[in-house]
Each structure stands twice: as structure tokens, then as C-alpha cells.
Length: 154
Image (cartoon, rainbow, N blue to C red; front, side, top):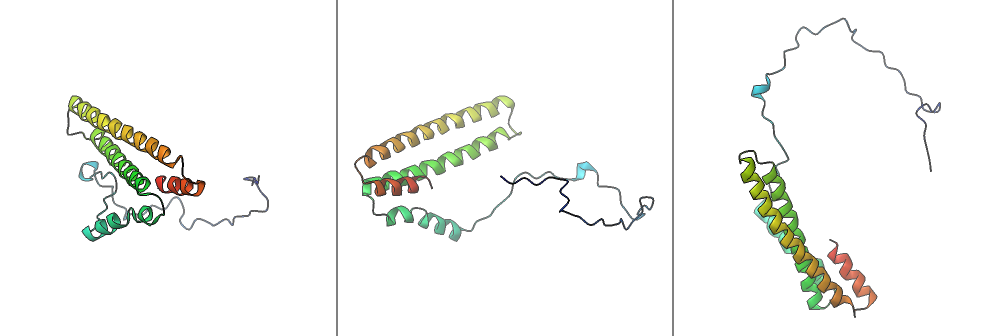
């Protein structure tokens, strides 16, 4: 384990003198804008073209299709991926619904509760699909099992 002390004598930082004395005040500095005029923006907006969506959708299961696994295992792997995608989407919906201030607290709680119930159903389906995959892989060779687990984890 390597530890570098903060007061290491081998590390030397040059001292740069301050170019402006503290007593000099910039007379051109403007007052900050009032808070009422600023608009808070949450998150990041990403726009993907329809061609981008089609390209992503077309190649999303290409690695599964190109594998030398049985068709039943390939179908289970595709189902697992789709369920994982749906779970991620549902979790994003829950986060958006819980942050939605346009709803009353009761309506927000009801909406989040409904979304959580559907998330639980999706998670249950994912667990069932993973159990079926485990059963299907039981009699497969070790390399096929490793390949399937690798594909399932993506």
C-alpha cells in the first residue's frame, strides 16, 4: 500500500503572488441578478434521433443472436434484458413522480404506490426468468453457462 503524506518534502508547489491587492475593488462589478429571474433546471436533456433509436434497438440483442446457445436460452436472455430495461424505465418514472410538485401529496403518494406495485411485478418476472435460465443452463457445458451469464449481466 502506498501512502503519500500531505507534508511530503519531495512535493514542492511554487507560491504565486496575488496580482491584485485585497484593498482594490473592481468598480465595474455588477450586482448579482435577483433570484426571481433565474430558472432552476434539473437533470440533463438528451435528444436522440429516430435513426439512433433504431440503430440501438437493432443491435441490442445482436450478441445474444450471434452466440452459439440454444434458442430457448437465447429467448430467456432477451426476456431478461427487456425486463431489466423496463425496470430501469419504471424506476425513472418513480423518481419523476416523487419529484412532481404539480400533484397533491396524496395524489403523488398514490401515483408512486401504483408505480412501485408495477415495479414489483416486473422484478418478480425478472426473478422467474432468471430461475428459468438457471434451470435451462443446468445441463449445459461450463463454457455455455459462462457465456449465458455474461450475456445476462449486460
